[in-house]
Structure formats: C-alpha cells, structure tokens
Image (cartoon, rainbow, N blue to C red; front, top):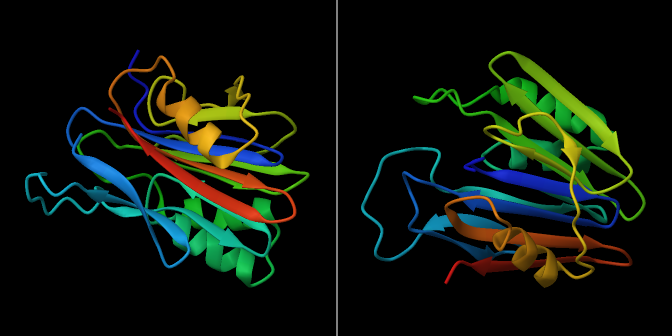
Length: 190
C-alpha cells in the first residue's frame, strides 16, 4: 500500500519517512543541528518547492517532525512558548495543505519526553491530537491518526524501523528520541 510520507510519534520517540513515486532521489542530511530532506547528487533538477525541507528540529527539549516547510514555524512557535498543541494547529493551519496536483496534506508531530502530539491538515480537515502511544498519520490512505507499533528506543532504531515498514516506495527516514536530551538519526533505503 502506498501511503506517501508519514509521521509516527509517541512520548519519547518519533519518526518521519519519505515515501515517493515522483521524487525518489532524496536523502536526509544533518545541518546545523536539524535534519533536512534534500535531493541526492544524481537527482534530476526540479523547481518543485515541496522536494527539499527541514523534517526534524529541536525546541526546548522537544522534537518536531514533519513533511514540509511547516516544521519551521511549528518549531518557532514552540520556541516562543506556545503549547505543543497550539504550535501544531498554528503551523498546519497557516500553511494549509500543499497546493500540488494531489492536494497533499501536511503532517507533523511534536515529541516530548512524557507527551506527544500529532497533526494533519487536509483539504477537508485539520486534526491535532495528544497521543499516549505511538501514532501514525500519513499523507494518503492513513490520513487520520491511528495507533502504530513503533518498538524502537533509539533515534537510529526509529529511523530504520519506519524505513523498513511494509508501505511502498521507501526513500529515506528520520528518527528522534527525547529524554534527558533530544537525539536525531536518519537512514536511506538501500
């Protein structure tokens, strides 16, 4: 099943996976303490604004993960002291779904050591929820939050676990853990 990009978050752990039929030549890189999705060196040039973006950032002992440029304003709202729920609502609502050929939803999550929030903005809805267990939301097919068995306890393990999930067209993934510190990791499909 093709679900597109997806986020899984729960208290203390989270992950984001790029799955793509149109732009598979991408990778995650670390730069300046955050994770960014970028085209690989062999990728065809494109002017598509949705191909490269920050997908994981840290804010005050929490991590934000998501599938686009909304990760930045969500993080900025957290930095200003907004509660996680409000930061997600604000960032998702203000940027809305992607105005591409598929009306691609924007998805994001905020991971804290003891709490997590997940959200999606689709053409027809904005959903933001507090979650007590790992929960998935995807851009297609699984576009409402649902429980997901994420067993990883390290950022590298979370990235690898979602990259290896049974959904089609895996490209790359980012993982986060939040405890005494925020840790990031990333993985590419082989």
